[in-house]
Length: 162
Ligand code: ADP
Image (cartoon, rainbow, N blue to C red):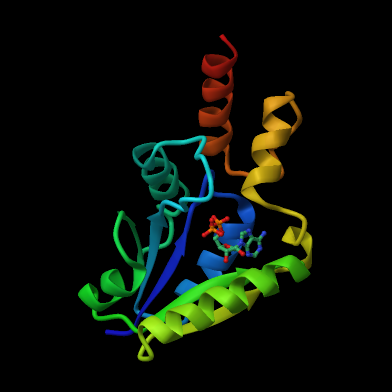
């Protein structure tokens, strides 16, 4: 079975992520979307909340599996018998970060390949942090995230502002 892993924070999942999930899932038998906690970022949503929103947002794509992992990405990939990682590229800052990350992973596990998907231009501006920021100030995020995520963000903002 051909598998790919799309690791990320997905805090929250956006239409940019979903576009990549739709495109990537067409190329393999099983497409694993896996939440990894990025230690450099303080998440808005718990892993459980992110699992729930990813599952709902990808429910229409039969070969997508949503999971989370607190350990090492290369060990997770090995446990799933998977040698292909997928990441996305938007603006030039992504290149620097992703290039370094992919090279490091290659050192850790030379068998593991990272493939990059170029963003679609209509999503090139879109990031989870932009969504979080906009939502915090009551901006319209309906073009950026699916309705289930918008609902969860609104609930979260009310709670945090109390
Ligand atoms: P991480 O904290 O691991 O960078 P993110 O959830 O921010 O996790 O992003 C996961 C991956 O999705 C990254 O490779 C990122 O570049 C990519 N990505 C995020 N938003 C978009 C988008 N709008 N278009 C294409 N790729 C994207």
